[in-house]
Image (cartoon, rainbow, N blue to C red):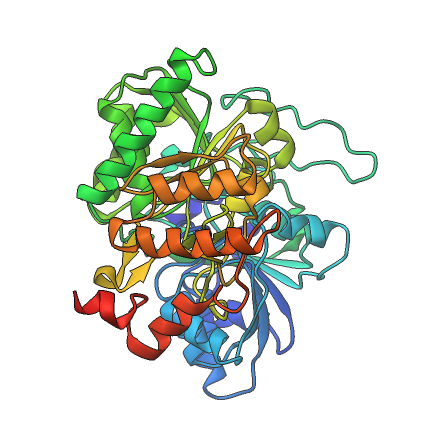
Length: 502
């Protein structure tokens, strides 16, 4: 009975259909929706918006925590509802619309969106649409499998629509820690001293008079598309475990390492999975997304505690974990993403950040977002929040793509998301390059020797030799810096024809 989950009886009369709730959203509004990496997203009201758009003009700016599931972005894009989208997305249909220039996409560090709203550099938020598993006696919202930006959206919005999801277990209550920083320039330190620290409330505190509508839903989160570890990702994990072991022997890390962060996706998840068989114990996580590997590490007795902003799982792991979420409850915490990704906390805790590169150049600059420098993939996400502020900034990537037609290590990246100053360690299946304390020429030699695939190694070494002859602190041949990318566009391979023929 949904009324059992609405503990403030005065709100019972606010229950309406998705279509009725969607009428609160008007053309030109800015909407803040819950959802972070396919979890805890609004599921019914966005679909009702898409249906309305078939009969009337309806264009909105949509803000979320990160990517949405349940084809929400796809449906809204096809219906023409999205005028602007931020701060992250991962939908192929929306991606194409962004790259055609039909939807204006604002790619932001995930810690920054609500800071810009709070300081009125963006916004205001007209309507917030927030998924909850229950509403407290005071009108507080108990989030589901993510917090993301939901708390600040709900606090700042003029009106709030609550999607009350009956499929989400009430064991989620107590899993959240909603802490909202005080306003700048008089902000106090964020009181998060360990991954286990609780600083706020287990619900989103809002004035219940702002709740304009409640929609009862019964649709589950979309599952993550996570592939099992393969030979390459296992090799990457092996190189990284060997490196961590070396850091322990040198007295730079303990056997519990430092709190771990890993970006979303197959490679980062596989790297964490590799720690199950590693020589480390009593691990902790201070991350954004808690993936399959988080619960595998719990079950293996390797992980003591995990703090994140969302729980995003594959279909099999979702079906396994959600019914017994209560058994993990004392070891999990979900925070607003501005806290999970906050530079102050990341630096204080000495987080080890493991994120994925789309491509990297021979000096350690990383491109996480753009294909050939122009076409957006998903967005920078939280990788920049962690890379610049963590104890160790690790970027992982397979050395080859498209069956070897593309080298992920190139002379110069076509778009820079993380410059060489923020990249400490680069890992491919070929090997690991420790770039700390190296000058650009030394970084190049280390990357070529350890990370570039053998089929491209001599090609990269030749480029570097000729660049060195021309001189400079960071030697380059500007007329050739993007020649590999151009060759791929023209021939379908970064390899010169003669080498490809061999």
